[in-house]
Image (tube, rainbow, N blue to C red; front, side):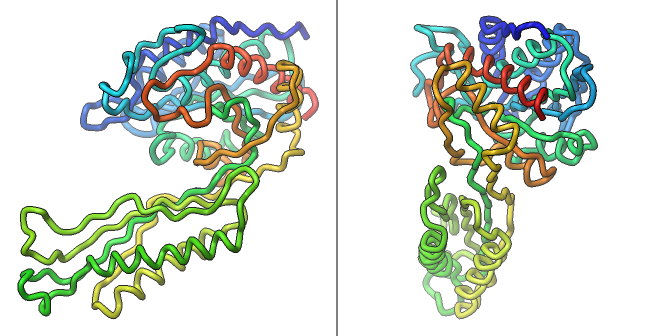
Length: 397
C-alpha cells in the first residue's frame, strides 16, 4: 500500500463548485438536486469510478459508487453525504451572495458549505486517496443522496436496496465541529386534526368548537413532556426529550364571526435513546381523542415521519478507527458528542440496520442560518481523517 495522499486543496475547490449550485428542493420552481448530482457523478467518473445514478423522485437522483478494494474479503464501509440544501431564506439577511462559493480569510462561504457539501467533497477525495493507495480488503461505497432536508427519500431508497444489505458501517459527513457523534436524537413529526362543527360566532351553542380542544391538547402535552424528561433524564450528549408545537391553525381572519369546523396542530417530537416511539405515539393519540370527546370534537392523528434515535456503540470497529484517525491527523484525542437532529444515518440505521456515526467539517449550529460558512482547514482535516479511518477500518474490520 502506498501512503495515503489526500488532495485536500482539490476537495475544497470541489466543495466550492458544489456550493455555487442552488440545490434546494422546490417543486413549484422545478429545482432539486439533479445539477449537483450530475457534477458529483462526473467527478466520480474523472476518478475512474463507475457511479450509478438512481432517481428516487423526479429530478432527484441518488449517486452511488461501489469501489472494490481488490484486496480480498473484508467489510464494506459507506461514506455518505446529501446533495440538497435548505432554502437561503431572506437574501437581505445575508452579508454575501448565498451561492457565492468563495474562500475569504480561510472560510468557504455559501448555503450548503457546512451542511453539507464540504463533507461530501471531503468524502469523495478521501475515497479517491484510499483507492489510489492500492489494494485494500472489502469495499467502499460512496453515496450522495437526496432529500435529507425533507423526508429523507434518498436514504430510504438506499436502505431498501440490495446493496444496503451488504454495508457494514456508514460515516455521515454532517457538520459536527469535528466531534464523533455516535448518538442522534430521534424525531417524530405529528399532525393532529381536530374536527368539530362550524357555526355562526353569535350562536356558539350550535358549534363544536375545535379551538379550545386544540388549546387543551397543547396544555396537556406539557405533562407528557415532563413525564418523559423525568423518566429518561438529560442525555449526556443529546439533552432532554422535547415535544414542540410548530404549527397551529384554525379559522379565518376574514370571517371572525365564524366558528371553524377544523383546527390543525403539528408537533416536532425529539427523543433520546430509550424512548419507546410506539408507546409515545399511542399516548399522543389517546390524549387527542380524550380531550376532544367531551366537546364532541373528533381527533385524527397522523404520523408524518418517525425516526428513532441512533445509539451506536463507541467500541464498534468503525468508530474505533474513526477516533484513532482523528487523533492521528489532528494530534488531539477524539471528542465524542451527539447530533441534536436526525440525519440520513438515522434512516440507514433504523431501516437497514447499518451502524452509523456522524463526523464532518463545520460548526454544529451554523446549518440553516444566514451567512453559512465553513473553515477550509476543517474540510482538509476531515478529508484526511475519512481516508485514514476508512483504510484502518477496512484493514482491521
